[in-house]
Image (cartoon, rainbow, N blue to C red; front, side, top):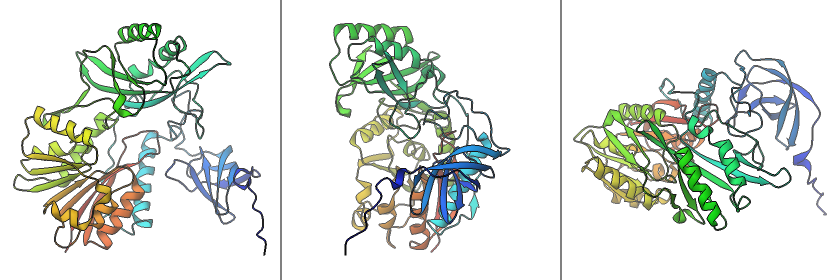
Length: 454
């Protein structure tokens, strides 16, 4: 029997205008409602609002829509501070009151823990949050030369497109970086490779002599000519920034001008620690919240001098070295060799000897390889968005730590792993809470404390 042909345009249909009351927010910051048996995700709508909407993506079980009109407005709706809100895809929640953003993220974490992991925390921790604006110390900006308009765009991508937003400032990056957007547009327009420079990666380190240390990594697809080099040197001197270049992969990133410069670094004053890092290496984008997050992690982990503790997905030692300050013997494992090298550099710089770092693909962990590491009293786990599924599945009766503190950048994978720890490995979820590392975005960071029950 012949199959019925499918409508290939079904996913891009434009629906009729309908009315609905918004129930909640999803993980992308969209309003959620249910109409005629379907879940509808409504962009720019807030919980408890009554709106008219029109779907632009229609599937069999859900639709994605845009607000046409807000008929009944939430008392938590505010005027976005950024003039580019709605066009730029960088921030999705500026129209929601700041404290309400944090509360929505906390509810999302609780819902994911229950619906995905089938677990419930004994206690929900007070959310951690800090400055709402100018907090972001790292960013990746897109660059586009628009020949028809004879200008260069530098900024984040537009919402739900690959087009570069037409913007001249950004409220969430460090003010000194926001002030560079227009000068960068003018600079690149004058360069011979203005159509061969698709990206600029920004990194801001701790202030030195009262001034931000800013590095710009220019992704260049063609060689700089002498005029380009001269323009970049003048720009670097005028704006007190370091210019680096990248021609291919990460191994081609190198300083261009000036060559002798202050190194990027950040500090944890509470633990008397300083971390040098290179601009393309992973560090937390919000250094103030990073300090608060580490303080909470140390409170939950409560490391003691006689203990043996593992820090999985340790990066450059962001948590490892504060743990080591307690006197505990600490093993930090990370999948990337360059981050392990930087962690060792920081350990030496801070004169910490009771720590060891190693390279390990933690996404391929097995019970056998975990057992080879030996037994630990406690774990700290700080994985990327994919979570630590193989690691927690590898736990068995012979190598279960008494306590696990899990720092997550994805509540869904945290919930999945929490389900394994509680429902299969004999742990209790003692506490969990959100960390508002990325204000005005839908991104949810969180922390959870697990204690061995049996």
